[in-house]
Length: 280
Length: 297
Image (cartoon, rainbow over all chains, first blue to last red; front, side):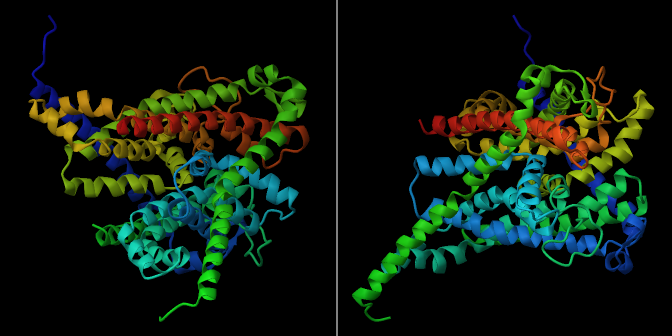
C-alpha cells in the first residue's frame, strides 16, 4: 500500500510553496520598478524633458521623442476607439449570438494574439511602401490602431454588457429608438468601463517598440506633420541602450516610461473601481 | 415631449436601420484587418519560399542572406527552445499565483497581487530586455560562464513576461467554477488543497490549458526583449548558455537594411511565425470555448 501523507501536512507544504512563488513574482516586479526609478530619477530634470536630443541622444533631453510618443498614441487611439466601440455596440445591442458574432469575436481574438513584429512588417509593407506614407506618424498610428483594436473591443463589450438591462427597458418604454437608447443611456453608463480599455491601450502604445520602429521610423527631429518620421520614447530607449549611446539617458528615458505606465495603471484602477461600484 | 408625428417616427426608424448597417460594417473592421494582414504577409513571403524550395527554407541550417542562402532551421529551433524555457518557468509561477489569488488569499492580499500582475503586463518589453541586459546577462556570465547572452537569459525574461497572460486567464477560469463545487468538496471533509487538486484544477482544466497556450504565443511572438538578451547567433544553440536567434529577432534585426530577396526572406520568416501563432490561437480558442460549452451541459 502507498504510504499516505497527512492531507493537512501536505496542504501546509503546498501552501508555503505557492506563497513563495507568488511572493517572488511580486518581488520581481518591485525590483524592476525600484531599480529603474533609482537609476533613472537622478537623470531627470526639466531640461531632460524639454530639450531635444543632441548628438544622437548622447546629450540633451528627450523632448522630440515625448512629442512623437504623444502624437503616435493620440493618432492610434483616435482611429481605434470609434471602431472598437462601434464593434462592441453592434455585438451587444444590435445582434444576437450566431455565426456572425462568432466570426467577429474569433477575428478579434486572433488579432489580439498576433505578435507586434508581424504588425510592424504589415504596416511597413502596406502603409510605408505600398500607400507611400513613408516612415511617418500616420503609418505608425494606423499600425498601432490595428494592434489596439481587440483590447478596445473586448473592454467596451464587457462594459456595455454590465449596464443593467432595466435601463434599456425603461428607455424603450419611453418611446426611444435603439440608437437613442444606446447613445443616451447605455454609452454614458458604460463610459468608465470603456475608458478603462482606452487608457490601457494608451499604455500599450507608449510601451510598443517592434511595431513602431518599422512604421514610424526613428528620426530624432521634432515632427512637423502627420508625414514626419518620429521616434517614440520606447524606440529611443531601445536605441540608446542597445547601441550603448548613453546609459544615463537610457535610464532617464526608462524612468519616464515606467512613471507613465504607473500613472496609467493607477488611472485604470480608479476608473475600474468607480465602474464596479456603480453596478454592484 | 408630446406626440411624435408618424413622419418623424418613420424617420427615426429609418435612421435606426442605417445605424445598424453602419455598425455592422464597423464590426467587421477587426476581421478585415486580420484578413488584410494575412493576405499581405503571405503575398510577400511565400513566393521566395517556393522559389528556393520549402524544404531548404524550413530545414536548411545556414542563414547567409548576402549569399542567398536562406535556411530558417536555427531560428525555428531557437524559438522553440526559448518558448519551452519560458514555459518551464512561467507555468509553475503563473499557476501558483492564480491558485493563491483565487483560493488561498484574503481580499486584502488579492488587492495587492492583482494590480501587481496588471503592472507586470504593462511594463514595456524593451524594459524587460534592458533588465535582462544589465542584471541577468552579467549574472549568468559570471555564475555559469559563456557569453551570458543565451537561451537561458531569454527563457527567464520571457518566463516573467508571460506571467500576466497565464495568471489572468487561469484566474478567470478558476473563478468561473460554481461555488457549489468548492462547498461540496469541503463538506466532504477535503482540505482546501485537496479541493484545488482534485476538484478545481480538473474543472478549470480547459481554461488553464488555454492560458498556457496563449502564454506560448506571447513567448514566441516577443521580439524586442529577446533581441537584447539572446545573443542572436544564427545557429542552432548547443547548450542553455549558447546564444540563440528566434524567428522574431531574425525579422527585426535585418528588416532595417534588407532589400530584394533578403527582405522577402524576412517576410517568409513572418509567414512561418504567423502560421505558428494562428495555430496556437485557434487551439487556445477551441479549448477555451469547450470549457464554456462543457460547463453549460
